[in-house]
Amino acid sequence: MIDLAGKTILVTGGSRGIGAAIVRAVAGAGATVVAHYRKSAAAARALQEELGAHRCHLIQADLAEADSAARIWADATAAAGPIDALVNNAGIFEAAPLDMDLEAWRAAWKRTLQVNLISPAELCRHAIRDFQGRGGGRIVNISSRAAFRGEVPEQMPYGASKGGLVALTKTIARGYAKDGVLAFGIAPGFVATDMVSDNVDADKIAGVRAEIPLGEMADVDEIGALTAFLCSDRARHLTGTTVDVNGASYVR
Image 1 (tube, rainbow, N blue to C red):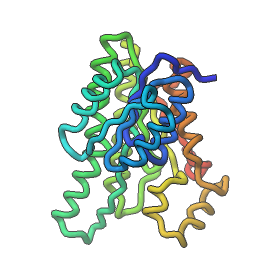
Image 2: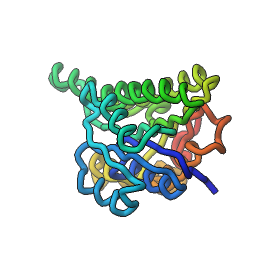
Image 3: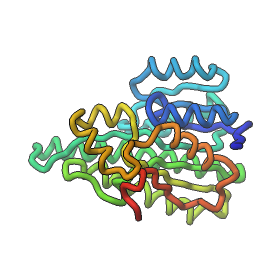
Image 4: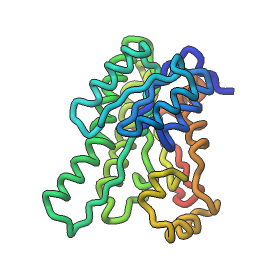
């Protein structure tokens, strides 16, 4: 049984999909959660009502804004006290085909890197500096199968950002284990979320399932449970590891 009682965990992109499953899983294990969201206010409030305002605090911010990470960390600690674990889950999936207007292509790269890599890195910076003064903490970065396999050409920014997140996780693990700061990655393949349904045509979903040996996309609750495990004290020597959750669709 995973016991996170007495822990406070910050989850970015916590209102829907994988993020909401993570919030439910860590709260179900006894943690107090700070759930960040960008625009899904109604979903965030519904999740808070489900879990209780004493257990789930909400923070709104757009990670595409350069100063958002600092504000999220400050608001999270003000709302719930010291943070024991950071889960960088928020991400965007924005196409940038090569035939796109150059300025628009550059803008898509900048937005994707800011949301998927730079803002998470800044949140990791805040977490590490805080954790060092309190005997340690946990960081879980939600990457992607694309970090290892690559992505389709029009999604080069996404693949590059997720590859960077894996390298960031490994570097933190190697550099700060001595301070009790442990870092883990999770690399999902296709997961049954709105992000997939919004970006994959319905007629292609069957093809997506066909390429997965298990014959189905991962369930968000599986990733939520894995995240809760990594935030606990039962996975210390997994630090630096990125766990694949892709139904054997990419084995490395």
